Length: 268
Image 1 (cartoon, one colour):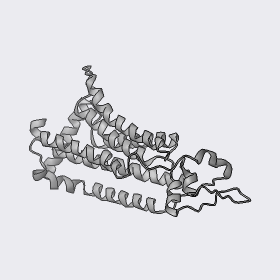
Image 2: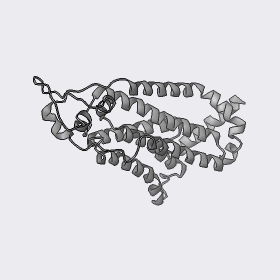
Image 3: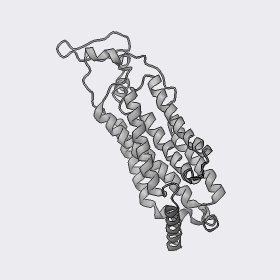
């Protein structure tokens, strides 16, 4: 199989593969636009009364894992691994499906996450200090609802606690990578090499540490993190199985090889 697939490189078949999946890339761009719009619109401002502020007085801190680091961890790092395997195997289909699959995994997860964030409007654990940065709280005399006087953008972000975006993105990208590595090193080949499990646990451990940092920074409640992790890992599983056979499935792998070879013959 490696010898047969060895001739399918970026130079020889890259453009043909891109044309074959042109609509997939267009839909991917649409998902990115939708997610951008979801981040622009104002989230639902859930009622927050005076009695509810007891659990929302955690300190307003910075991010242990900054926003810009999440795409590096969840997308760029896996793509570097995909590229390394490509240079060894020279299989453009594997490289293309790995990159397209992980981008779909992350963007579908991002759209679902941000849509739920906007719809739920759950306050973050540090909402008090977002609402009253000077520590002087003010409430409506009738409803006892908060009357915020903090910065508008900070308050807006304070209504986006559920689910955790850091967690869902990390588990979407690194969860996909876990599936990918599971298939590549044949973790479930029933030969008893437990060391393989250590390899595929590393991406999940990294994602888990990112998720835990959100609770430590008081940006999320623990339920937000759990929901984000489950969401990201679920979408990653569906996206992986859309592009690759179930690891270690000999029949599925044979069909995968036959299908791609047939597709290239049609393209040629």
